[in-house]
Length: 303
Image (cartoon, rainbow, N blue to C red; front, side, top):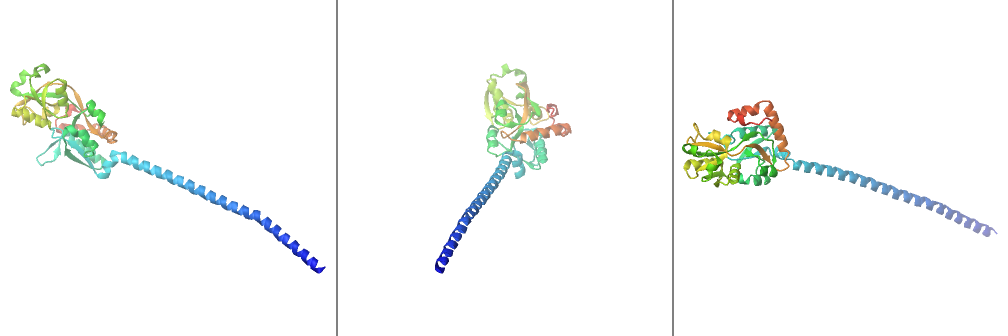
């Protein structure tokens, strides 16, 4: 009998333990579920953090890209504004010590200083000015550049800062023979390649030979290897006639009217910066003072 009672108690205890184990199972399952939920929550938090990191990275990349697209930032980083020019008195030419001076050169140096950098001048082949810009050999073309349709479409340009015209240069003793466009048809002209002078020669169906610079065109006429030249009126006023290096040359026919501007790479933010600089320097009188130093004050455009 005692054995039966003991056996019954043993069986009841086993059932009780099994029941406890069964009741623990849901608890274990819930703990596992909670662990999975916590893990998923951590994953979501990490994912959100990753997204935030990705967003920050995107913002950073965008900022870097924006900086990379800024010509102003590019110029400030390298510390120089590289200016493409030709020898063109009174805009860009060398003094007795070999330093570049002139209305354009002095204004370019002042603009560079306003950016916290130095101006560096490089003589270029005028016909390749767009290629020089795009290749970043230079940062701007600042050399009495006429704002033609071609220039405006291929460069980011400043507002006009000087008025100009293309004029015909002939020997003084023949000036009376060439007082209108019709009288020019039999002449052979020297013109700077890629210049507004060449454009006028083409527009008026004139025979011409391209040379590297406007100063070279004057030399051709002085030497008698060309009958005439077409150059900028501002250059003509400074370089031909009494008291100049070409006293035996003069200018006669004006072929057009035009305006000068400064050209930068297409989309460059330097153009807007220069417009602001022009406005400020015109208002405080420094632009006109510089123009007077080179005798071009009558050509300056109000900013």
